[in-house]
Amino acid sequence: MKSTEKQLAEHNSKVVVTDFLTALNKEDFETARAQLADNVTFKGAMGERNGADVYIEDMKTMKFKYDVKKIFADENDVCIWYDINMDGKTFFSAGWYKLEEEKIKSFQVIFDPRPIL
Image (tube, rainbow, N blue to C red; front, top):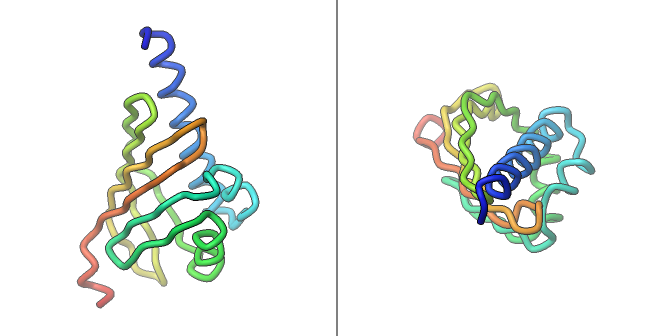
């Protein structure tokens, strides 16, 4: 991939992930859903989800809020350091988002879950 193509892929990937998190923060679940591939997979410290509709339905209930600290991109991979607020508790977390065709195809989020267990 040429340097300009790589830069464009990284920019587009960052925009998709940022739009996704911004939409979740605003509880704009339709816009958040539009950033996901239909068959997206999610893995987290507390479980897994398969499929965009399943994930979004869970987010409608959980209503997490994201405070992005830093975003790193390498072509279609985006890594984010952020605080996630869950039920009034805030956890420093890392998320790794993999994109295909400018949609989030899979992502993983890691954090120390002990304070909520």
